[in-house]
Image 1: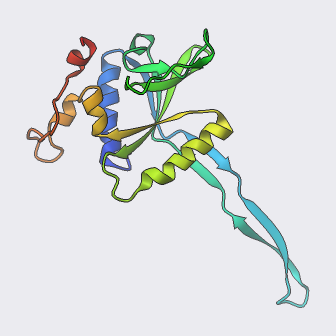
Image 2: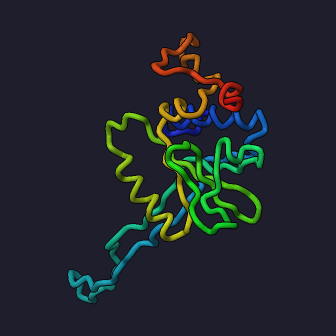
Length: 189
């Protein structure tokens, strides 16, 4: 699976998820769930360049699809530590607190599922702007919230996966400009 990523940030987040999975906090990780946002719009016209006036079809607006980066099925023991439910059914209201950096999850018949979009902390191409529109559209059409996570900043707020501590090519210690917290240190805070 490590060759199936569009960016290094996606791979780094996958390492974060794998460490959680090995420690029993994540049941399942899927890459690239797909949501259809708009089926497209076409129209017919008569091509008058021929004697018969052939009816043809042209695309006015192309279809729009959105593929977030990860689908996570959480183990219940991760609740409150790594994720919170988007809606507390006992209160029927959002429970997310921005000062507590956790991933939001949906409750689908007892399975707690999160959808994740990964972007770099420094987004030189400003792709975050575009994906925020698709995230809003996905929420409106499918009632599915997609968490936008920026890597490596996310590691500052949670824990840094062990594999990230070593560079990709030389396998030497990576230069990290923040205080590294391990998974064990994070869960014992």
